[in-house]
Image (cartoon, rainbow, N blue to C red; front, side):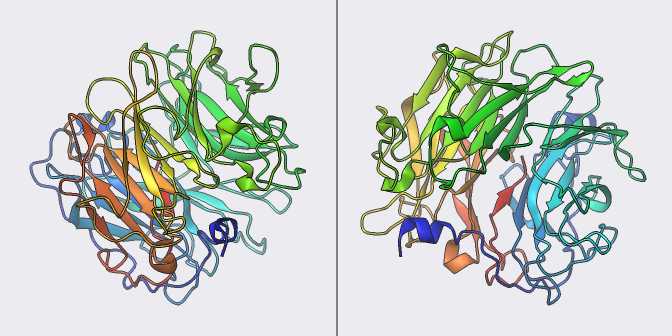
Length: 492
């Protein structure tokens, strides 16, 4: 089977049985004052430790195939506490909706304190959710944080018969009023959010009616104190979605203002040509100059089937556009590939280097670092086993120096690399042990023929390490594992 065929099967639904809708979270002990949690975007129970939210969007729930669930594993001084966890489905008490076949509950996740109570909340997308008699328009709902963890929820958006909801989400204060807002590719839901009525208001957002949105991310690119939005788009009329041509793939920047997000501005090279977009995007200050930098994962390389591919695209690449007072400065960019000095591996077709960008400081030096998979990486004769990579930020920007990679064949990492695992297809950077360094998480939805699993790597002063690394699957969460695609989405 070719990599191209097998990659299309990542995330294909199958069935698992979830026994009991919710595993009650263990009450946190010695919790710190709640104001600490305001600064911790994914601290759902207010104990000062960030928590990990991960989805199994293809899981069977109460006999309903591909209904999906969301799992939260709570943080502690020792990192993830696997005994302190929740599994939430649409059949959980107080959660909007009912688990139904093909809902894909959890196929997008975002975090933030939307109601301003000091506890982080979790936004869950369900792209296959029916609304009344309308089939599959999609919905978004908030699960509310509190001292006992997540509980209850409120529906905040749904698609309509002629306009399906794109459930990709990004959280930020896009109008600078001090309340977090929620952006999707077609609307902005204004904060503060209410547990009874949802968003304070909704504004339409049109990125480009003729283009499809691949990813969105929020961050303060121009350092004015108001969150901006960055989106990656591609032309759906392109007959080959793997064509990496810049004309068909572009990035746009929407500046946050007191009046909300500005019109999208396409990023262009200094010569006026359209800058190449990509498939995954994150924002973080990798050179510590106070401006958020736009980090783009460009995995499409034609897979050896498209002639005249830019050699810099073979195997995939990570591109950085540095922030400035005027927004993304396309005269200041960095491109990293697996042929960049210091980066493990070598650039080869179908490596998918740049899979699922995550940006955070992994070593506590104040520079944001970047995690991304090379999910199609062959390990010896094991095709598309995959690995996850971490690149370091520096005063000069993103660099290959000191880069690390991890796979299931790395010493002290649980498991064994297998064909078409696509290890590193999903990544997250979350400081679950409150040491000021984000820990690395790799979601492997294809593990064990689609059961899925999550790998955790705690960080020290040199970044993520294999010391104490662990993995967990649906069984650890108290769920049947078969074809759940656990690890298919992390909260952002």
